[in-house]
Length: 174
Image (tube, rainbow, N blue to C red; front, side):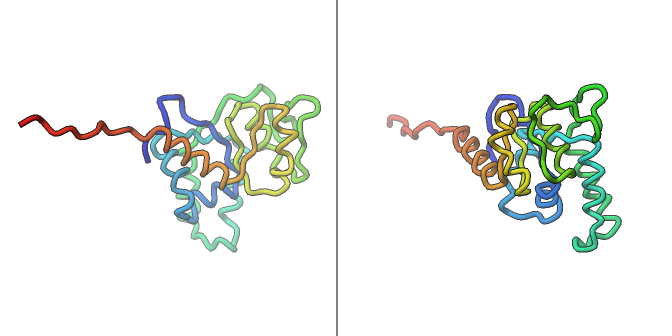
């Protein structure tokens, strides 16, 4: 993958299902996201509630991950993510969002919205229908919610714009 630009890294919040796609299933479709993260062109933002949720989810029997693999996935996540500074007093019970801020029906997803808002992430990438339903309302608070295919398309478009152009070949005079 070519560098996306000389701009600062794209800052993203990924919900847990997207993290599982990225770190567990190694789907080729996720390559632009995975490469961008590995090359420092994408900064994945996280916080304690997301880390705790990931630790819980990798332990689900349906994933059939050994304890060593679970620890490895969480360690890779921690190595490749950044924890932004959040407002003092932020917690799962006090997310400190403004009046009218969208509230997800699924309490397990509310913290992702709050993280994207407080960290001023360029996007919250989600596969969760309850989160995706909040797109229009979230935009009023500068929170951009995208699906994985939308984000992959965005990354491919950015990479295409930044592909270095080769000078035309002009043979030397004889």
